Every structure is written in structure tokens, then in C-alpha cells.
Amino acid sequence: MSVDAQFPDELLVGLTPEQREAVTSPSRRLLVRATAGSGKTHVLTLRIQRRIATRELEPSDVLVMTFTRRAGEELRRRLYRADIRDVRAGTFHRAALNIVNQFREDHSLRPLNVEANRRRIVTPLAQHLRESGELVLEDWQLPRLEQEIGWALSQGFNGPQYAKVARRLRRDAPLPPSQFAEVLDRYIGLCRSRGVLDFDLLLSEAIGLLRDEPAVLAAFRHRNRSLYVDEAQDMNPLQFMMLRQMAGDDPDLFCVGDPNQSIYGFNGANPQLLDEIIRTWPDTISLDLTRNHRSTANIIAVANTLLEEGARGIKPAKDEGEVPVVRGYNTDDEEAQHVAAWLALKHRPGSAWKTMAVLARTNAQLEVIAGFLDAAEIPYERRGSDHSPASDLTPSDSTRRSDETQRDAVALSTIHRAKGLEFQHVASIGWAEGQLPNYNASTPSELAEEQRLAYVALSRAETSLLITWSRGRNDPRFPDRSPSRFLHGVEDAIHDIERRNAPLTGEARRARLAAIRAELSGVDDSRISSDFGPH
Image (cartoon, rainbow, N blue to C red):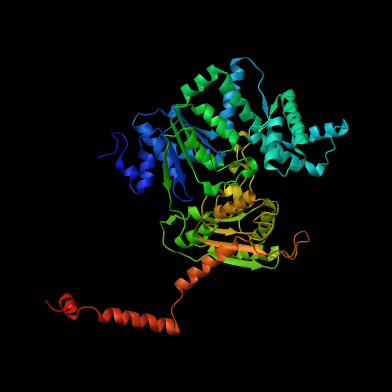
């Protein structure tokens, strides 16, 4: 007998009670906090599948907002295997672009261009300010200026709003608040005059249309009756504003995320927005998926040392497995050489190259690894922009180190681009101060995000995990590095596992044997006779 007439029970076999509730709950509003490896994508897909199968929804009623092109593609692929078409899945930016384009087409307006590279707008703006004598901005200041513009826009600020908040927060900005506020407004004005929107201004444009144009809002809600948000912990305030405009007061809404994997603070993301979902729609049902089905118990024990105290209820679904390993080296070349050797040892029947990954904080660290993989003739591929936010508005990254037809290759990826992925064997490199945490992280919130980034790296591993760092003695920029502060808890957890697994010797062994004999001597001899004697 099925749970629902058109949704067979066998699709629910193997789900935990919490997963099953997330799939079958009749509530129109759910927030699912799902730890790494808890099967959140499977749950999200099954919920959509069940609601379509039971005629609660048509596929064309569903809009799923993911954070990368690849996440949207994977969701559509899973639904396609269930013979479900017409579900729309893409980033917030894709949804915003559709809203803006439809409005402009309906009103015979010229399409706006979306500029993915903010530097192309910041550079001419800085040049104009310099030439006019209004403000001297050197080229070395532009990356920091660009970053602060991105943060301000992701919060939904204009110049005066930014200045007020920046003073209150005492932000470490490249310019004084009032001066930067003027630059921010000039940047927005330059974009408007050129008919160009960057990714954040695209969201703002869509928010304005949903707020100010009743016909736009009515058409959107008529077409998108059920909203799903994947990786909700990565929403920034601007994206949450858009969600609130899209959803209204009584939405059909399903959000899933993990505050422990919030790693896009540079994009304005704030994991506290998960709580804002509850405050905005108070009758939202909150569920927790805490059972990790991906990693072995030993990997989880090590990764959990990077979580805040209140988040350590994560339970492993697998046995202990291999003990994770930490290794330090004198130079980056030694580190890369040993990582290549470790990968080669893991390459055996049942462990293809594509089941392995090397994860780093920055792309520059991966360049050294790539050279040694080339020398060892180990195939690899870069995980590119398809795994980045708003990636479905940019051309697909089809350039790979390996031949496109050869899928059996080690993945080289930054930790940010590896989120949502999993591999049997993971080498996480660069666990040194200045690298992880990155030297740019100085405030408590920035260091907390670096710690979450480290957690994301370790929680990609299913079976085996290698963590490495280098003293950098061949690096004139950052020589004599020290091990990352995050390694202290990691190494303590590994030592605990090793002590637990070590064979007993000497007095400890004799004491254990004595305890066993004492326990056995208390067993009723007559019971032993009756249990094992002749009958």
C-alpha cells in the first residue's frame, strides 16, 4: 500500500524518519536544516516528485532556486529520471533575469546587458574620478574597492544607507564611509547610464519590478506557485528580499540549508537569514537532518571538531573506516609530490581517478599540484565557474585539463567550488596559517567563516582523507608558515581514534583480561551447563 495513491512506498524505503517527514509533510512551509551528507538533494527531489505525483502541483508550477549552474542541472537530471519535465531550476539571478527580460519585452524596452565582471565598470569609474581630480584611486586599490561595492549592493544599500551602516559597524573599508558612499552611487549611476546591470543590480531591478508593478507580481505568482530554495544558508540580504517579494504572505515554500556550510560571506551571505525565514513566516515547520550518510564515522569525528559547540549532534550512518591523516612538509613542492603519490596509491579497482579530489583554499595552490600530477601522468580536471554562484548567467566552463571525453580524472577544486560535491578520497591541502585561515581574514566573523570553509573541505570525503600543510620554505612571500589553528582539534580527534583502536599492551592488557575473567566468573555455571550441555 502506498503513502499516496500515485507515490509508491518503495521510494521512501531507506529514508530516516526525519527525511521521510521532510518528503511527505503536508505543511506548505518547511525549513530543513540539513547537515553535510544528509541527503538534502535527494529529499528535495523526492518532495517535488511526490507533490507532482499526487496532483498537488504541476511541474510547471515549481521554481527551484539553486546557487550554481551544476546544482540546477543535477536537480533537473534527477527529476528527468523520474519522468518529470518542465520544473524550472536555476539561480536567483536566472529568476531575476527572466523577470526583468519579460517586463522589458512586454513594454517594448531595449534589453539590459548583464555584466559578470564588475572590474570592467570599476576600472573606468576609477579612471574618471582620477582624471577629474575628485578622487585618486590607485590600481592596487581596485580589488578591495570592487569587493566593498559587492558587499554594499548585496545588502541592498545605496550610498547614504551604506554610510550609516558602515559607521555603525566600523567596517574596514578602502575609503571613509562618506567617500565610499559617493563612489557607490557613482558606480550605480554609471551602470544605469550604460544600460548595464551587474549581478547584484540585476536582483535589485527584479525586486523593484515585483514591488512596484502589480502585473509583474501577479504573473510571477501565477506561474510559480511553489518555491524551493536549495543551499539557503548562502542567501544574502538582497536575495532574501527577492524571495520575500516573490513569496508574499502565504507562500508554498521549501527551504533547505546548513548554517555550518555558510561560506559566501564575501558575497554578503548571512547564515542568520535561515532564522529570518521563521520570523517572516512564523508557521514554517522546522526540521533537522543530522545523520550523515556520506562519510565514515572517523572522518565525521575529525570534521566535527570544526563545528561550533551547538552543532555537534551530527550522527554517522557508516562504520569507522580509515583514520584520517595529517602531514606537514618543508616546501610546497614536497607537499604536492606526496599528494600525487597518495592519489596514485588510492588508484585501484573500485577507486577510479574520478573518485578523488584535491581541495585548496585558492586556485594558486592548485597550480603546484597540477604540475606534479602532470609529472606523474595522473589525469585531472579543474572544477570551474559552473560550480560558482550565478554561474547559469555566464558561458558554461567547458575548458578542462583532461580531454572532455575522458571523465576519469582527479578533480582539482577550490573549497568553495567543491561545496555540494563528494568524493571517495579527498586530499585537502594548504592547512597553514595565512592559507587556511586566509591571511585576509581578521575579524571574528571572517575567521568563523574560514573555519566553516575548513569543515566543508573535510566533509567532502567519503572513505579516506589526507590533510596537508607546508612550511613554505621555498616561498619568498610567506616563508616559515606555522600549522593552521584548525589543526589542533583535528589532530586531537585523530589521536583519540588511534588510542581507541590501538591494541592493549602491558598493564592495560593485563587489567582488561582480569576484568573479563571477573565478569566471566560471575556467570551462573548451571546456566552455562543448560545452555551448552547435551540435551
